[in-house]
Length: 612
Picture (cartoon, rainbow, N blue to C red):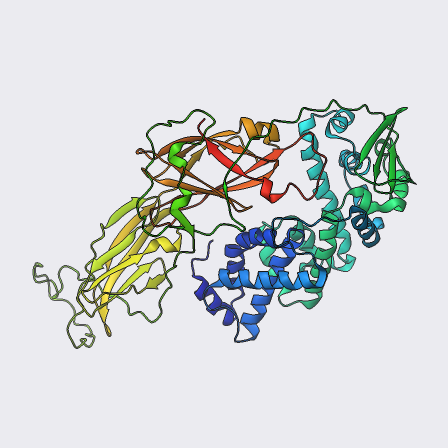
């Protein structure tokens, strides 16, 4: 069940000792923290999120410091400061989109020295034979995707998927070995969950249990910190590096017969540079730096696939995950959308052009709940003395009468907003009460007190709350001092943005890089009439799509590079407030690319929408 308390309420509860409040804050903010951590230090993103949450937990529960209400902003500040501190200590932080050149031979030497080849070999032996073989072929022999597919008798497109599953299995088995045997089945400690915690950072149940436990358990917190550091090094190294030269020789003698059919002999050879296939005499050799790795399985060179023609993709890029938008000063109109595309297929629709110029990147204000707001007066009921038009009934049994409140009764809040509305973004609730009166608005369990102007007019902007799609009920009443009016009730519905075209997209080997650049994905949008759709990715790239008078648009989505994309799409109104998010991933792979655990450069992961 989702905790509906605000961040301020959760922080107050956490200070009072409610640990479930900490779990609720983790569930609410850890996904955004993960995305931000990837921008700061992708190699240690999980560690950065966990350490930053823990630092805030200790501040709030043991000191008078820490956030009072703006938890996410405070969290991002802690994360950035922590990452900068790590950068000064280890020079591992990437704060820009440009990567400094690194001597790969130094990286190989460091990884080979630090890794525990015995544990890696034991983890490899614990895997199914098929997983052993795909890891060996891809990361030790450095065979290409076509060669691996022929050897394992699978389609080339399935090689990457199999390798990813095998790599995840290897990491899980290795992490299990890092937990002391006495703690692996100890229900009193969370160490037994560390492998799953590090493999599945999106698992809310596991993350909550682990984070609550390590907040109070120093041994487990220390073990997790040490394991995470080693796991980060493992994640960026190939199997050959993790095993080391001695480990490869041991593995050749101990793995299954099917795997050792591709036995590896390691020799020290001269020369350095990129990995190169030397095919001859039925023996395949690969050089990487000063290593020469040979395998005894016979493969032939695959026919090189032609390089896809480059497609220019232009989008507005931001150096970080984009915040909400507001229109530029002087332009409050909603960009109109065309009834039908007028551009040629493959071209940007004229209705989409120039939309980004109407907006500037700024955060929108978010209403803060109020405290000590008096309750509304009970509503009048027919048949009571407060209703002069009611038909007299039998004399009621005498009961204790509350002391009447002195003073003039509070005026009505004077709500002018229709009592029932719907839209793709939550509404502005407005009204006009008597001058000098206060107004309260209750939404769910939260109460707000909008500012009342001198003439009694007031507005409460729910858009800043970024409500999810669904039905909402609110109450509004006026009060002066301790006297309140009865509440006026209203309802509104926030409609979800509809996006079609991703039905067959699984996020796993969805299309090749060539297909993504040329054919792409045809996407249909349904939202507010003459509205605008704002699209962003985790890499900070953004785009806009204009809807027509019927709230409809159809575009072709093209991406420029292979990689794993996470798209977030929202409708945005004229003031830059956005509606509920629609999110989906898209996996674009390059069958000709050499495996790179770091993935593509973020500046290359651009996208655009064109006329289909």
